[in-house]
Image (cartoon, rainbow, N blue to C red; front, top):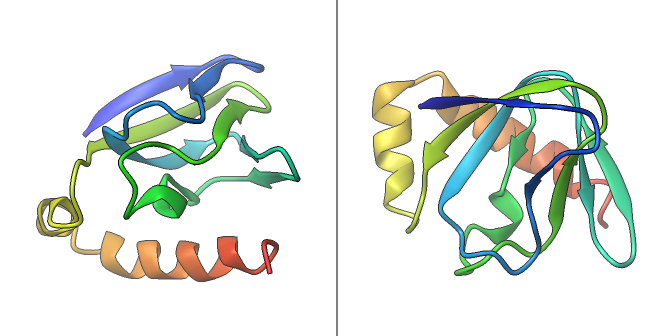
Amino acid sequence: MTAIQLKQGEYLVHKGEPMKAIFIVLRGSVSLRTEYSEISLGSGSVLGLVAGDANSYVCDYVATEDSLVASYKYETPEDFVGIFQEQPKYSYAFLHAAVKQCQPIY
């Protein structure tokens, strides 16, 4: 796990960049931006799940305020095993975040 400090307005990732990590918002908020919508994600949100089966990020993630984000290496779905072994409590957090984040999309 690597901690990343973001300033308001700073991009965490850009749409189309190769997917290299999954992120968890520890403090602050980050906006998920697509050409059709913008969703604000606060503490406890998991960023990058939308692209979990893709080779690149499918949206931009931009800090909407000064934020702290945890970064976990991710290249294939098998990398979740390492994340969950390192932090078993994240298995529930990832499931909860996925359900919560999909609701505004549908």
